[in-house]
Amino acid sequence: MKTLITGGYGLVGSEFTGDIIRLSSKDCDLTNKLQTEKLIDFYKNKNVPGENCIDSIIHCAAKVGGLGSNLKYKGDYFYQNIMMNTNIIESAKNNNIKRFVCFLSTCIFPDKVN
Image (cartoon, helix red, strand yellow):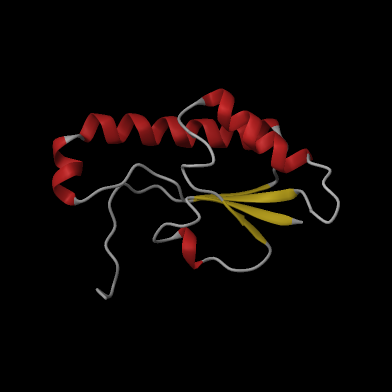
């Protein structure tokens, strides 16, 4: 079985390794309930030869930005993130995903600057 990583190319999501499927915002608008439900349903129940279905989700996707942007657009960040979180959690529940980890952040800074 595989793990689905939302925000799979971001600061946190890109660090995961193993038998995973990485998603980005180009794959689905997680603020859209129908798109999110269809996406999770597809990966949970797909029957593609050589592909395993997901059995877990690590939700790292978020509307993110710098500190200034977070302060200026608090409501937008909150709304978009709460919708993503609500939709992915509900879709995981509806698709009987037993293992789910959710990161909740709109602004993080790496330890090292390259």
